[in-house]
Length: 84
Image (tube, rainbow, N blue to C red; front, side, top):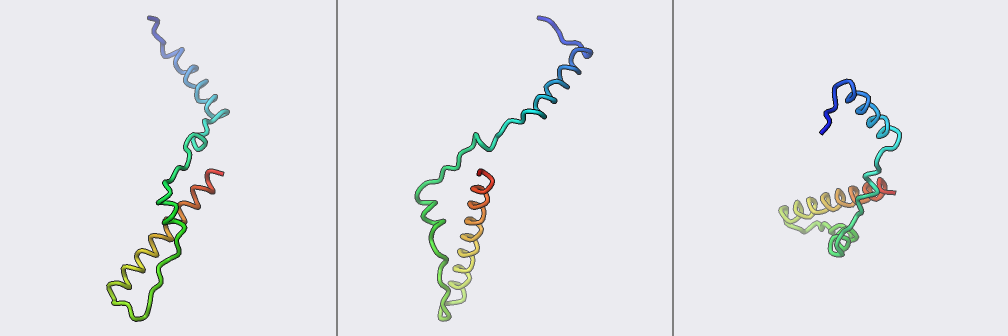
């Protein structure tokens, strides 16, 4: 098998880098967003209603759930935006 010397390796590596710079691989097109129907059902649900007569712990749990739901919706929308 023929060895590549350092004199041959540098131009070869430079050519590969130039090709990648001119024709970058589109990795986003290869990954498709696929979510189960249960995940989409949760993403489409409205936030939980916090009532005045809720116990303090229940109020905190609802606030935490609503914050997580808003974060998940924002990330989902961001991924859709980046994909398009």
